[in-house]
Amino acid sequence: MEAVDRRTLLRTGLLAGGVGAAAVAATQLAPGDPGPAREGVARPGGEASILPFRGERQSGVTDEPQPFAAFIGLDLPQGATKETCRRLLRVLTDDIERLMAAQGPLTDLEPELAAVPSRLSVTVAVGPGFYEAAGLTATRPQWLAPLPRFSIDRFEEGWPQTDLLLQVRADSPVSVAHAQRRLVVGAEPLAVQRWVQRGFREPLTASRPGMPFRNLFGQVDGTVQPATDGADDALLWLGAGDTPAPHGLDGGTSLVIRRIAMNLDTWDEVDRMGRENAIGRRLDSGAPLTGVAETDLPDLAATDELGFPVIDAASHMRRAMPAAPHERILRAPYSYDDAPGPGQRSNSGLLFVSFQADPVAQFVPIQRRLAEADLLNIWTTPISSGVYAVLPGAGPGEDLGAALLA
Image 1 (cartoon, rainbow, N blue to C red):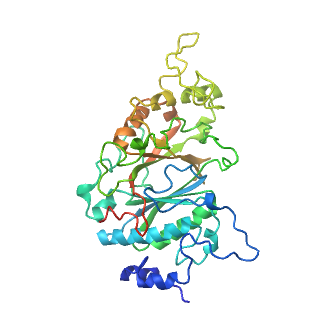
Image 2: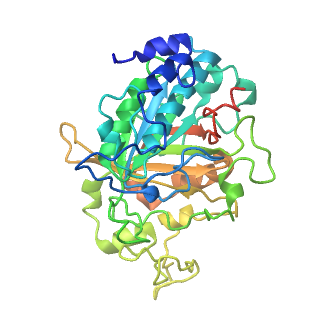
Image 3: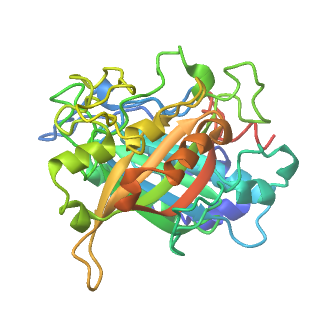
């Protein structure tokens, strides 16, 4: 059977549910169907290695973060309309459902790269430009806009806010790379890739449950988090609290991504005591300087023998602490370590990613305090920033964004 041209299917509007797609699907496995076992080929993983695609909420938010990730910024073409947005989300829905079920999309010529279950999740979020193209600016959440420019920001041109964001995470870097390629190629010409930011976390956490995430400064990152068992749903999910969800986003959330360059060369010049003073926590355990365990509450009033605060007033931990109960965000950061450019010894940093119901109320106050006085600012520089609305999940037979574009 000849390969099917996706652009033809897009133009006719038959993809994912129409006659053309049905003809192709007859030769493919349905999402979730593992297919017949092949002689000599074992299927690693299992049900625990496949995250659900269908549901009220998308995967990739409250799941334990996978060790490998790619964040893909997509822009809609000039002249895009609501129908463009609808067709794009239809394509993405079909491709993501298959990839998360450890199968190749319909036009995948190397589906073997998708066949290993690896807890792959693909999370789709939209930016202000998506709302504009879809003619939905009147219903756009007020928080879906660029963050205020902070005094420490030094943004680079290569990482702008985009119309859509795809968060691709998996236990395997091969799964991430393959899914990224198939999703970007599959989305054309309805969306074009603007940038890709790849990140990683410690991949051995599966064998060491509870192992904390450490950034490339050696710092334990993300100690204080909202509960993901339902107790703090109002802080995470739109429509879960007293405030009604914005149009079409009930069951969604918001995503903030900031690319933060870390100067490892000058950090190497700081002794361990200076590093811990800047962070406000011990490097080995992540405990506050006044405690012994990571989860110990800090004693902000404690002083040393000279009368100075044990935890510096400008330490990162102290500046990041919530000043009000709602100032909590779900952090899901990743490190990056890209090839250094000319004259550089390193090109490393942090992809700061957080989820929250309202970034203006929850994230901005924290970031404002950090910008005003955080000792880590000596070694870190935010070089990009973006805010996105994570779409609700897709129910049976639905496309992502169905309620938003209804």
